[in-house]
Amino acid sequence: MSIFRLLAIFTAFTGAMCAGSVQAATLKIATESPDGTVWMKMLRKHGKAIEQRTDGAVKLKFYPGGVMGDSKAVMRKMRVGQLHGAVMTAGGMIQTYPDIALYNMPMLFQSNDEIDHVRAQLDASLMAGLRQNKFVGFGLAEVGFAYPMTQQPAVSVSQMRGLKVWTPDNDLGSLRAFEAFSIAPIPLPMSDVLAGLQTGLIDSVAAPPVGTIALQWHTQVEHALELPLLYIYGLFVMAEKPFEKLTADQQLVVSEELREAVRAADDSARRDHISAKQALGNQGIEWRKPSRVELDEWLSLASQARERLIDSGYVSADLYQQALNLLAEFRGASG
Image (cartoon, rainbow, N blue to C red; front, side):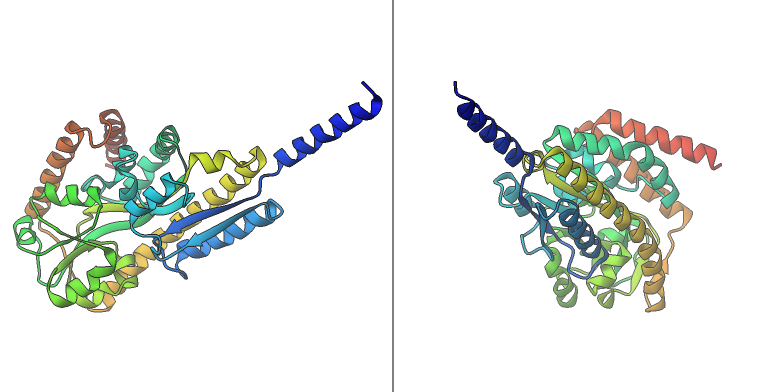
């Protein structure tokens, strides 16, 4: 073989290697968060950092405000490759990876400190579980506790059963939570909730204060119950296939930046939740506290419901037991 032939083969080979080392990609990401929210500001900031650090080879295109549909539609689009990733509440991933709903079980937590203690130990396990189910997770970001907010005063379980309570459409976790207390909720898309409150189709919501204010629901309710019914949180996931098409260096950059975006949103959400809860009181919402007897009934029914959920395979029994052990450890240490 001539030296020229060898040089031609070598040149072609090295050219192919170089071409394979740089993958150009535009990652399409859906989110329910409207533009201007903390989530979107963080996502755009770190999306720009990804583009800069990869010399423009990897770009993120965001579809905010739920324009890609609800979580069910988004998951379908991810499966066929129309979307590559999404920011959604944990409820949106339940059918794909049920254990992601671990923290979303009714009244599992009673304080932010309990949440922090358990999450510090178990978040990594949930991310590993996502990967086993062909998704790459970049972390969890809390939205906050969902509190019952009503047009008529309601404190006890029996009083709440008499109300027309909203639950998110296609959110199995929220539906199961209400079933725990024998409350028959009315499923509606989030976009229909304000009109539902205005027309009387529903008269109650259970939502974090931040969301209640952002969506103007607080203008249609007068009472709030000091009861952490559900812990609401979101996550950033990407389908494994498009992620693995990136080079190793690009995967590292994307992972570092998106994990930081989620961490920043998580930190900010805690502060926003506290201030939003205070703001509701300042705007005339009456916060009511259940009596000890009423609270015990809520807690007892929630505990029974969680056991039924575990028996049905809703969340892995071993993982749930780990969470209970961590809670017992924390509650014991804190007296």
